Image (cartoon, rainbow, N blue to C red):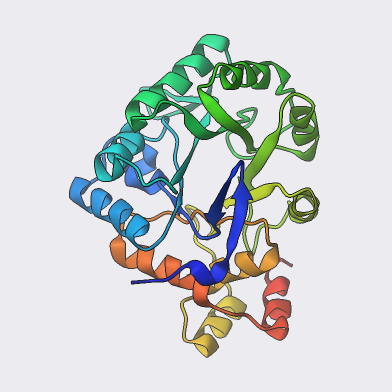
Length: 288
């Protein structure tokens, strides 16, 4: 069984989590909509992740919708004391599978209660507000109104900690004036490094940075440099891409997703890889 202890830990809210976690998005059906093709396989992946030492799982009740949270509950409830489940609000799925912004008080309150019910929890460890000004990436727009509502739900005891997802530095600064922000979840990987300065800034402030699509998402990373490095190390290109993120900054927490136990084990093994300064320098060139 893979050990992920070598990759270290980082603080997430008032909890300490291992830096290699698991993202549940791929447990839903195609396009993150509807049920999985293989329900039993989805349960097996979650149980294997926790048995392998993962104590940070990322999810959202709009995955499915409701699907991934219900599978997490079925697979893992009652939860281990050290398990931190991070979820997201701010979006709703249309009947056609579309992604729609959901920032009203009623929508955000309902989303928090949906997460609580489907996960089987009395309080949510961390809730990320996903900024939905543009489905395809961060776009400017004030998050004051929805974040204030989420902070109210925190004061009511339904949410312990708040994070932000798909946001710009301006929105993070705005958010930090409203409440404590414990993590930022944005699109970032070896080839997509628009957040380089932000990663370093958050590291200095002790705030976790959680890259989504760490392996490129729907278009997997491809690079001859990455393949060559992987060949020399006896690893897969995707393992090297994950290891690069762990080396990139101490506040980076990984949440690679998969619906396969074999692929999960491969992802977790990336935490064992050590990359030399020379190798890191080569990989740094991939983005350019």
